[in-house]
Length: 298
Image 1 (cartoon, rainbow, N blue to C red):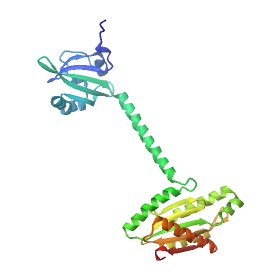
Image 2 (image 1 turned 120 degrees about the horizontal axis):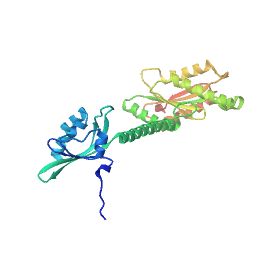
Image 3 (image 1 turned 135 degrees about the vertical axis):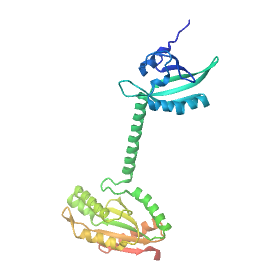
């Protein structure tokens, strides 16, 4: 059984033109519908396009057709009489027909493609933003907003490498809120949480932008900093002690103990261990104090 295929029913504009003048020899009904053109003898395909698209046809599409014989997925715009130009996707190929060369054009509306593309772009941007937020959340202590232990360890290693490269000494602080269990037991966990938050804010507001500060667990905080021509780490620690002694949080007198290890060559693990030992020395000496040491001299 013979089946006839009607080119007018194709959901794309099908056009055949001469190579030199681009005179329309054939165009299906869909092309005339989307271009709002009327079939007429001697009409040229360029008349359907905007001025900018005509420039693209002459400067890019035609050279491609003459050189390679085909041009694919070129976005142009159809000129509408009483509406905004309509974006279309154009594919074209040169075909030898008897004694002359013809151009076969396929023109499809690109609005839906552009819409889908924009949706994909928006979706990608949304996923990237969510990924960034998840990355921040994965590195942040929810209660205090400081870095968490995992992020602190990662960034501290980078800072130590930087210090070694520039031959700078560096300092590791271990900071522990004194008698924190008593605060929770006597005043409740909500008050304890507020104490943690307020201490974290005090530490953050008094540290420098390139210092690495984190809550590493419970009531313990840690900070690593490069020793540059600014306030020494010992002065910083003493200032933190003084600031806390001068105010109350939720009406409670809050103090901290600090262990401070200073070095110009120690690894992160050595610094961490040294500062932790010094912290416990501060607690054993009565709390609310700083114990520090240059661990390179040990």
